[in-house]
Image (cartoon, rainbow, N blue to C red):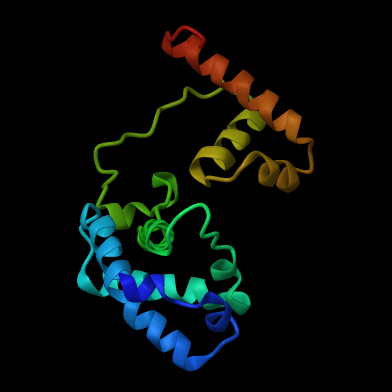
Length: 181
C-alpha cells in the first residue's frame, strides 16, 4: 500500500509506461480484493472477477486518464479512492453480465412447452356478433394482430377497431352471463 501512496499521478497520467507498470503492480492486489469481495455475493466465477478487475484499469486509463485525473488527495487516500472505483466497476460488470430477459408474451409457446390441447375455442352462436365484429375479433385474437394492423388491413380508423372490439366483448359477456368489467 505504501508503494501505491508513492505513485506520482502527474507522471502516470502522461502515459509513461514504466510508471503505469509500477502503478498496476502496486494497485492490482487492492483492486482484485475489492472486486472479488464485491462479486462474491453475486456468485460469479473467477473469470468474471479478473474481467471486472481489468475493467477498473481500463476505466482509469480511458480517455487520456480522465478518471484518474479526477482523483483528489484532499478528499481520500489513493487506496480508498481506488477501492470505490473498483467496487463501482465490479457492480457495473455484474449488471452487464445479467441475462437479458424477455417478456413472457414474446416467447413462443413451443419454447415454453405449453400445449393448447386443453383450451377449447369459444363457440359463438351464429348471428350474435356482426360480420365486422367477428372479423375484428378474428384479426385481434386468432391472428394476433394489433389494433393498428387491423385498422390498416380493414382500411378503417384505429378507434373504430377499438370501439367495435369493445362492443363485441360487451355482447359476448351479456350472452355468456358475465358482468361487464
